[in-house]
Length: 415
Image 1: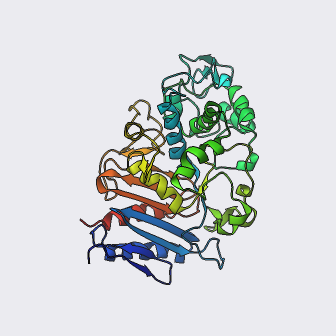
Image 2: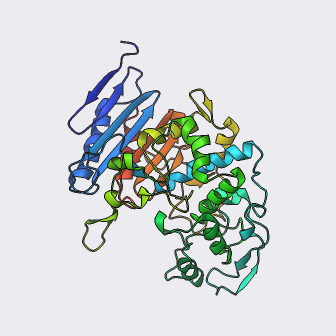
Image 3: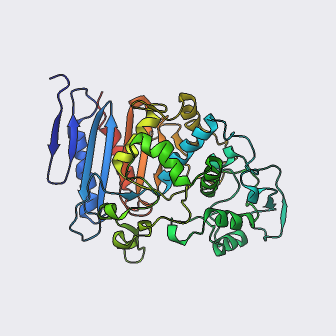
């Protein structure tokens, strides 16, 4: 029957809105559920929630538990640390200010971030801290959005002088630890005492530019970052469970996060859901990776991006801004050394990765989005009218559940 919808649920918590528009193969979605269930049953992850939406047809899987050996089932409304999936939201918020002419992409950040004015740059990446040359130009807003400010991960065989100094000042990037960071002003002051690792615009370096971007956004907006995000992104999109902390009334929905112990093969607790670092608002709301969210909250953001800035009656961004965000910005020279994060079939826009060529089932050209290091993944595919989210909580996807999810998802497309 045209327009018919029915709700289906099985003992593992699968829910689907099934229509007659031919968006999905039901049998192949069942296969995806079976594979995800296998990841849970062999204890590769405690639980997983997925949401896939195409042509108005949405399917949700909730399999496993919130914590290892726990009795509480993972649910559709479970709250996850989304880590680097914070970046697309921060980039979209930046474009709101660009559209209002409060920021300009190629303007220097020096006026709003004087701590980063008159930069010195290491003569070579392995130089001592006092072996520097003047920066050839200032850092720009575009540099922050495209991660070309000149500071981030190095992947050297042993810690370099700049890495040791940055670690001592607690400004070296790593897994989010929100209660360890100082206030935004103090964090930026510390960063400003160090030279840059590379010249502004020279290399793509993950992920410090977005921590700096969060400070810039708050200063440009004249209000705390979370308040600005809530007014301009979260509330208009109905993202009621997204923020930099989890209030007491919602803490029973927070999933625990884990890291694989390489020696034992077991999952060790990284963030205890019952005593989480995210229970209290952080001194530094980090636009690099500090948010928590749910699949339904994030799909609202994803659908807005898929709809080129429109969500229901709300126009969040212009079509031109979304197209700019999802256009590759990185030259071959700038991406040298970034292969760990940007594979050969990808480019980087503003806060999102973009697939540039198909070299496996799931690598659809034009698909854009990003992953979170705690075990979350979001992408949208304009050609397929598709947006999808995977949320679990094991650092770095050691079981490669993400690869299985995206492969099975594209294998389930119908029509």
